[in-house]
Length: 208
Image (cartoon, rainbow, N blue to C red):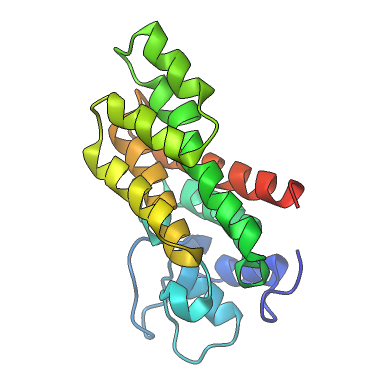
């Protein structure tokens, strides 16, 4: 992993290992609380005197929703959130074109990989969801399913925003649909969301 303002993934892993039970936890925490969410752990790894979970300060997309999702256990949360960090650690250095593509890919996958797995959809609808090639097409296909209006709103906001704001909305939409729409075990939803974020980050990099 490349430099992340002096915090490498190796250093971050070592820091996380010193946390209670060696695990990341939900929520934000005071400086005197030894527990950390993933963003707080990154801030400590970077040498911040006061830990923070503010993604704008850390120049990263907002992944607090993923961190705070209903993970089966702390070990799973920790392992998967470190996968997310590894995928987006250098976000501030991504060219705008890659950031835009990352958002587009997230929205497309909402249709092709997530909502298309919903029970009760006709074969024709599923085929349409899986054929989507653009973000706008994804919004239209998901909207026509008449499910997850809050998730669709987030998809629309992602299309209207740019940079980290767009990524925040797109990641939020992915997590929403994983948790609320897909016929997925309750505890499996955040893993599917992480898989989606990691896959889109990799695809956006390969497309450069």
